[in-house]
Image (cartoon, rainbow, N blue to C red):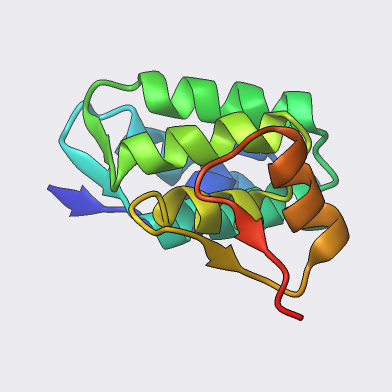
Length: 138
């Protein structure tokens, strides 16, 4: 099995025709990902890849969703903690920050999550009835 770094995913899914090096790397990334050989993507790469798509390339939520749906459909690709990542993506597509969604999904066995982020994390998680609850310490 071969582990993939974020830049392999970025070059495969994001084609930057204005950058000669990116064009070369796209061809290599395509060869790797479409090889059918067993590949693995860790959770931290998923987190970084979402940030690159959203933060650097300005992908919207629908574009990011399409990329992840395709990636997760590849039967030769193993996603670390796939059930947690899927749960995080569901919350992300419902309006949560992806990093917060991933944190929350990772704490599924906890009684609560403590955060100072009242508006975007605590209130949203309460509105959606997510468990464990996100509590703001006082």
